[in-house]
Length: 137
Image 1 (cartoon, helix red, strand yellow):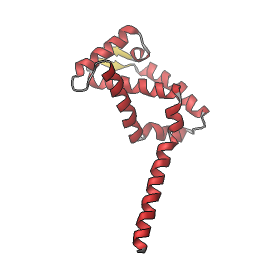
Image 2 (cartoon, helix red, strand yellow; image 1 turned 90 degrees about the horizontal axis):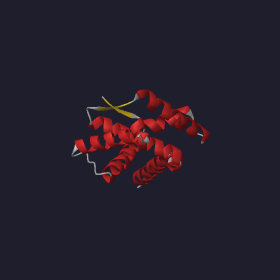
Image 3 (cartoon, helix red, strand yellow; image 1 turned 180 degrees about the vertical axis):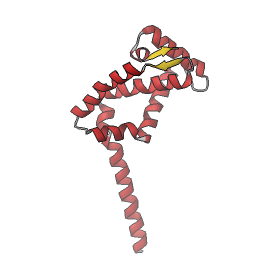
Image 4 (cartoon, helix red, strand yellow; image 1 turned 180 degrees about the horizontal axis):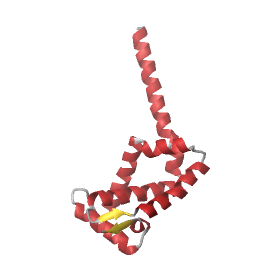
């Protein structure tokens, strides 16, 4: 009986910890500047990962990250918390899913990488935020 209570209590604590972990990033997810910047970076990464002839521009990508970092600091996050957010596997997958959805809305699919490359080329040609982070080469 005692073991069962400990098991149930332990599961409750783990569930609470997992929920707290998820909630700790909610302010960053809800901030339009950060959410958009993270999504743009993820889309750029997916384009680069699927297209041998398109790569991210390292300089502009780093410069684009600075305001996002500063915004997270202004929202009360520490440097170590921001690093943890960037490294959080669940958060990375959540953002990748958003990037996939964004690409799919433009007719691109990971099953057909050329469609992703075309979106990348279109973004570069349009000079969009995503396009400015990419280059053909």
